[in-house]
Image (tube, rainbow, N blue to C red; front, side, top):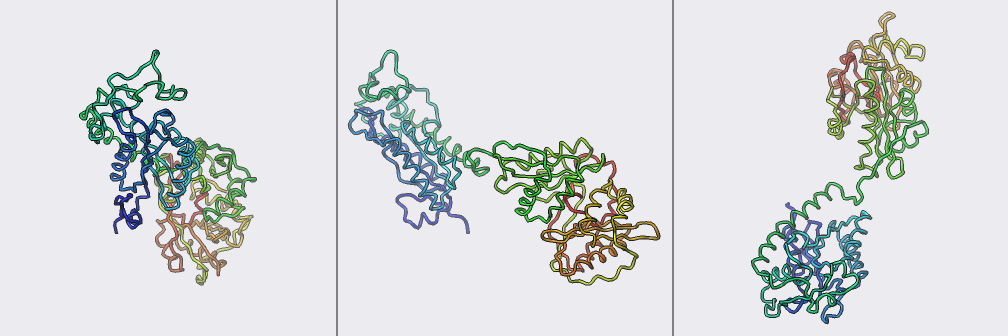
Length: 530
């Protein structure tokens, strides 16, 4: 069913207000004050109501009742001019904020037609800066057009609008032909010291004799042409980011092991799998490029960089506190890590589809595709390995790292050593005589046991290693990050009860000199290390 944004106003029943889904209210604010001998005291209210009705109709918004009395202190001495104190007008703004927010309005557009309502602005600014659910837009109608007049009050501009819109209310014979002026002339800022009565005995500050309905028609058309585009521009900006103060600056510092509790807190908020040992592995394997972001004085994000000699670097663990998202934290972290890693050659990472656009903008290009497969409460009974495998021990790491380097495209002995020490029961190596023909490692996680990396000369060897590692995972929740190109291997995962959890996009910035041997890579160590 289509959303209902039909206008709801004071003449509408409550049902019409219930049906309006715009979330926008328009509040006209005028004044009740003298406008010389020729215009009614509710001139500002009539004009505010006119423009508010036009805005509400164009937006499909709800129209609030006119605030007919404003702050008109400058008209003291003219009977029939009534004024709210600035504090009371400010309190009315706050009251409307509470009322509208309680009824699920997200925006209130204040259409003001009296320059003396100066206390609207600080009250609105105070509400907006608190980043409440309700936001206010203040539209001073006369600012939408700049007529070339000497208009201050009751002169050519206002009189022309009234002659066009409400001609019966203009007393043409009473128009002041000779408004009072002083030498030197008063300026608008003098209203803080003197009232209108000191500047013009008739209460007019301008030249109403120059007014005409034709001028009013022209100026009105110009104001209407600018009103909705102006409001919609502001609404668009609010839809992009409703915060008053913007994101604010982000500061970076180097990450150390003392920051691991921060990393663990952020990864839990993201529902990631790493344990403290994984953070230590990343920091130990890195020569630098690990950063903590601080936003508003609070640690709000992390990034890690593992540099694999001068072959390439790997970016991982880009985590941002949800409270600081859309503040530029992730971009600042990623940019700093990429700048650091770029000095050592190409930069690589495994991105989620949600992050692909950001990485594209930073110059990364898709290299290949992979996916995470998961199996809850793994219960399958893998067949016995058809090939000779044996546990991968700390003593065999050097030989395994040498075998792996050509296939991965760079040496990663530090990572392999850490993985073997964290979960020795998941490490296996396949042999053909004295030659290594494949290996796998794994690690425990907060949510899953992960198998990988798994590197082998052939799919048959990969299957044998997979079965051996999975035999240690009975009753556990298991994940495997496998390359899409390994179709047969992924088919075996499906037969064993694994299902697709999420895709990844392997991306690279720069040209790889040592791409490795992708056909021999069946499962990666994890998106944070490749």
